[in-house]
Image 1 (cartoon, one colour):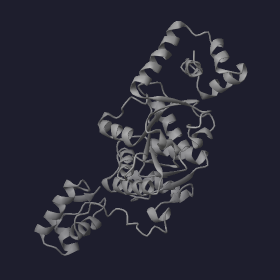
Image 2 (cartoon, one colour; image 1 turned 180 degrees about the vertical axis):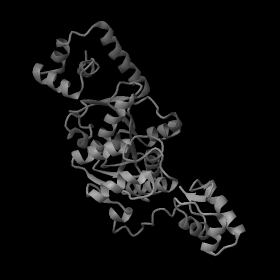
Image 3 (cartoon, one colour; image 1 turned 45 degrees about the horizontal axis):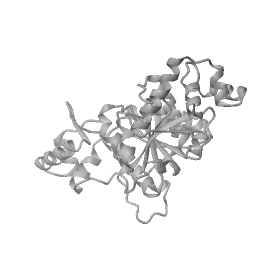
Image 4 (cartoon, one colour; image 1 turned 30 degrees about the vertical axis):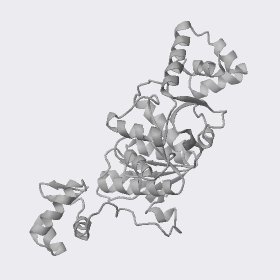
Length: 340
């Protein structure tokens, strides 16, 4: 049998993770001897063979931590996964990577900020790493994919590299396969559980040269990613948000404590970029709409109050609000309109 088969046989044995794997290899001197010591049965060996066959059919490759293709930043993390699976464009793994994460329940403004920043990093040759969740993760991946090229983003999954989750991001998954790469440490076909996502977050931080945190409440999985980033001595940046919004608590607290650097936009990273455009201006259709949007926050304002503030007629305000609502950046409530 191949050495890869022996390594997988060890890793697929119950109760053996990266730490135990390293101990066994060190004790017996080779993957072959270590695998033989486990006295695995035919059922387990058949299971690994089926997994490897399924991977081959789907174009999934295995990358061991002693191979050149294994990401250097991840290899440097203590107790990193000994073997990862990858699907897509492997050249993406040769790039410097920037992690970008945040809540699944991000605001439209927060997602657009994240997407624009991801695009700017991609334009400067970085691959954007995230977890393919809804909200902030999706914005980071899609922002990177706005940039031409086929090595723009990395999705780290909690399940098998072929297991698409969430299903709403099926189209994004296949876009990433074409123009980036999908990674996982789990077996092909594996359905993730909650604990797998915690470990996934650790690998996002490990792969990245730096991590940028968007909107996130204190219990958000993104906050665990930020914790892993600081433990791994990665530069941590956080995007501030309105203090009345619970989604601002995570990044604002990290900035206030000095754990994270304040991220105000692309100029923090590319100060000499003469072609840089201000973030949050893309897809804004008119000066009139911007003026209305700028006056809205988390406290509802009625159409009549907005009309007085921006000195426009009620009919003009109604028109602008309809456009903004269709764009998903404002929402009508009982007390008026708020900005999302």
